Length: 214
Image (cartoon, rainbow, N blue to C red; front, side, top):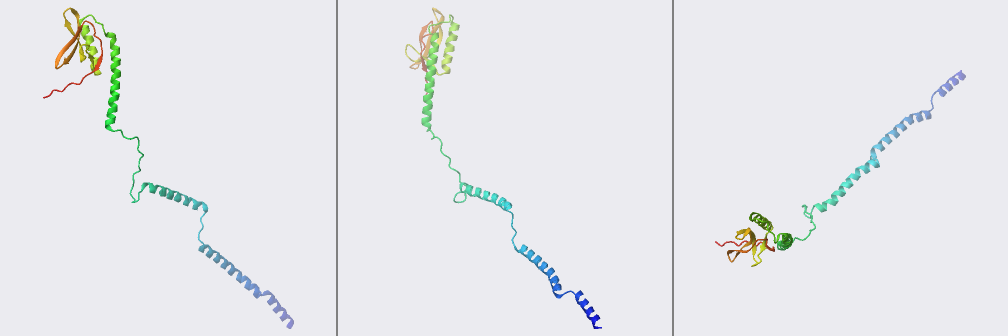
């Protein structure tokens, strides 16, 4: 009977798992579980890292805005934080009023002299002429005088040198009328000339009227 009992016990021992195998198999799940927990814990402890692209995209607009503010602030604000107006470079110096008026008067005199010489030269074509009737000669003298009045001129009287107005008056022996120079001398109205033709024409500036006292 001892032989069969030994065989049965041997079979039992071979079918039972060994202690080392049980310990290794039991420890493997625990090791995997510990490694998983450690990895998750390290992931939670480590700070999140952003990608270089997102970091540069966020930083560049801020730096650009900061540079704009830093450059424009000193120009726009003064020491006390108040806005200051920028100094404008001065242009040409202002001309004094007296100097400006004097220059303008000289220019007008130059223009008037040029006009006087031009009119005088053109009117010489009428000197010594008559239109043949009192009416026509009067219209001619009125046209000449209107032109002179418009530009501020008078005829210079050949007899006395005063500024005069050209007129045509009826006169005996001159059917077409007499060309006379009408002017005031020493407060009296005086007529010089009296020929049947247009007299020599020399122009003068029209004198200013004297104001009556009282």
